[in-house]
Image 1 (cartoon, rainbow, N blue to C red):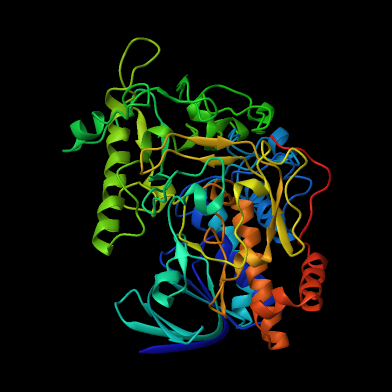
Image 2 (image 1 turned 135 degrees about the horizontal axis):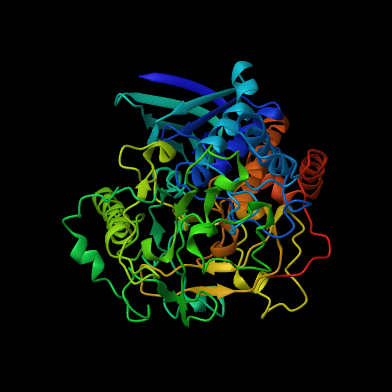
Amino acid sequence: MTEFRADVLVVGGGLGGVAAALAAASNGAQVVLTEETAWLGGQLTTQLVPPDEHPWIEAFGSTATYRRLREGIRDYYRRAYPLRSASRSLAHLNPGAGRVGPLCHEPQVALAVIEAMLAPWQAAGKITVLRRHVPVTAQVDGDQVTALGFRDPEGGDVTVTARFVLDATEAGDVLPITGTEFVTGAEAQADTGEPHAAATARPDNMQAVSVCFALSHHAGQDHTIDKPDDYAVWRAVAPEWWHGPQFGWVAPHPHTLEPRRHVFTPNPDDDPTRILADQSKDPGSDELWTFRRILARNHFQPGAFDSDLVIVNWPMIDYLGGPVIGGTDEQNAAHIAAARAQSRSFLYWLQAEAPRPDGGAGWPGLRLRPDVTGTADGLAMRPYIRESRRILGQYRVVEQDLAVAVRPEGAVSYHDSVGIGSYRIDLHPSTGGDNYIDVPAWPFQIPMRALVPQRVRNLIAAGKNISTTHITNGCYRVHPVEWTVGEAAGHLASFCVTRNTEPHQVTATPGLLNEVQDSMAAQGMELAWPNVTYY
């Protein structure tokens, strides 16, 4: 058995985990960072999800390190790619010219930048990264987690002993093995008081996951995959509120639930420098090809690329069959396998049967891109998990804290803010049969108490597993918020190491809390919003 010791153990190498490791190490802590897959980056890399960001992201509304990540990605393209001069000179280069946000890019570029951000700390011996390590056991002494056990790539046992454990996994996987109290799914309205909460609690009612994939299009070529054996099963899926089969161009509009017809036009001859990537002004997702495009060929010198690259993360691949967390290992694995099967069948539908504007069917020139995804089958390494297990924290963020309809004067201002974020409350259709739930929300703060469990004294939530609800998770789950949560968790943990204290003492002691907040602000963490509105 292999053993490691650290001040701070960060479990999960997604955006929250990377930010946590960087923050903890830069404030003096010895860090071990573990990740289940070969890639760090989570949503940006293993899940193939370009950033969902608010309209002010280029000017304010994120941490300094998140801005370093974003600028590092842009600089990578400027250094390594044959950009046209007009594109190279763009201060806010959007390599994919995707409409979902102002920085749509390839997953492996994000991976390279993340690795570069970690490299100096690894060289200094301050951060140890253990890839392909899965958390399986925990050693717990009362209200303290003393060590976690992992399974390494060869099936061996690895133990990491640490003073503080940060759960930055995609699904809150550390919570059940440490006995930390948590919830899943939808809470009851009687519990939370939220206008959009369910009448009764449904722990198995969670937002759909999606297994994304990358495509390019090559006219005149045939890249059609073999027809999946279960294709007819997926082709027949038609929720009663969907306005037709799920494999189709019509789906519910997230805001109105009325029928919404999508448009699909591979490789439009557009000008990527003129794309408006601002969801407050142009939601943009009617046109599927450009919405999550991650490489726009017209940004680059003629002939460099014969196709755009796009990510398929569309309503047609939202998996409604059941939750991928909360069940037995076998049940969870079965749902993940089914979600992958749904995505593969949708790809076949696109290639062979999807109605075209010219009256024909299918685009056989659509090519799956395993070279982009880093997987043999061309699908994402991991499903896009929108909703994690959530700690029972010292404070629970509820809809009444930030929904415009409930608080017309603005979101709650928390005395213990450790960061800010902004996004609509955006819930995808759920495994319990719910349609979209979409609620305008004010730009919000992140309270430290939402990162700290009620009971366990040295575990800190560092991702989508903070103490939100099924409803408010819908706006706290996006990329810059996850990064900020992780950075705050790493900063808090390193402060506790230095001061020989605990998170519970920090949240309960105004002097300690103010000291942490001052340090965060000095290092580029924004704790309050200027005067901005919702969208």
